[in-house]
Image 1 (cartoon, rainbow, N blue to C red):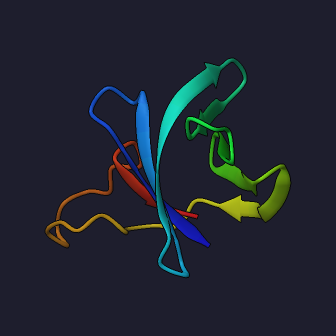
Image 2: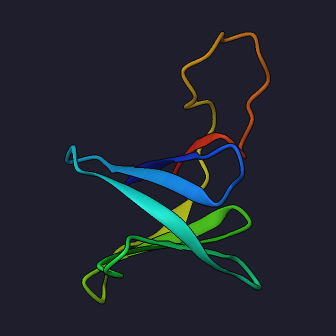
Length: 88
């Protein structure tokens, strides 16, 4: 499992894996989904609608991930904004 915080322009994303590792990724493709990767392409995140998967050094490490609700650190009464911070 992991969480994603998108930058204001949606061209950057910070992915945080449950084991504590975090990576700054950049949008590299946006055709039928969004592909975010670090500079060396060692960590790649694919997002399409409410589904996502992650690859590390060419191997899928997180598959069949589905959007979870309410992970942004915000007021609990505010509506969820899946474009800003989401968990998979």
